[in-house]
Amino acid sequence: MKKWQCMVCGYIHEGEEPPDECPVCGADKSEFVEITEEATEESPAEETAPAADTPGEAVPEAASATAASTATVGDDIPIQEEATPEPTPMVSKRMAYYDRITALMTEQHAHPISTHIPNGVLPISVIFLIMSILLHFDELGRAAFFNMVVVFLATPFVIFSGYNDWQRRLGGHMTTIIRTKMICAGIILVLSFIVVVWWAIDPTVATAASPNRWLFLFLNLVLLATAVVAGYFGGKLVFGYNTPPKQ
Ligand code: FE
Image (cartoon, rainbow, N blue to C red; front, side, top):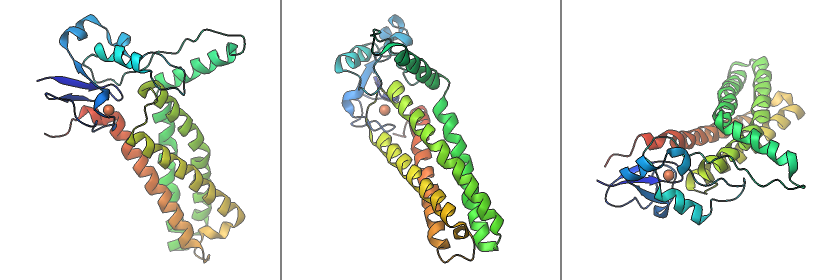
């Protein structure tokens, strides 16, 4: 039985042919390369990652092809080596500093860490809001607001660290899962901003007395549902390749 590895997410498929589409990240057939035992022995994993790249650019075809021919068996998502561009007077220290920081962010899992902060706080915010409206407990509406401020403030960092991981781990390849996560992130940022600003203008909106409370609650529920969808696809992207779909 042949083995094929998705060069975008690392998913391994067993069969005579690669799948038409990666079940984990949605990359198409051309992103799969056959894994051979010889390649595994000859080339350590570190050397097989797609070539280092400037953030914002996709992995060049040639680089992908080189990495493809020397793919190895393993569960780890291939991590691109840190970019080491030739320093120019204009780019100078600032770019090198940016590069070091963003490489460290990926190495130390800044994205999953930062994602769990708003994801942990958001359900609490919505639960407090529901309790405020249903139980006429106004102070919980206030607590919901402060929790939502944390969600709003954390989201830009979540988006940036996610973008950085996408560039460094997945070579900036656009797939259905990545597109979905980006849309979800945009919705979360916009809705959390609306919720926070709305409450700041009219704090009674989070109480049982407000005529707008149900619309306000609806926005909060959409926000929560969007975070669930983003989390689902994030989990699929990170863990999905460890559990190949049933034949
Ligand atoms: Fe994939």
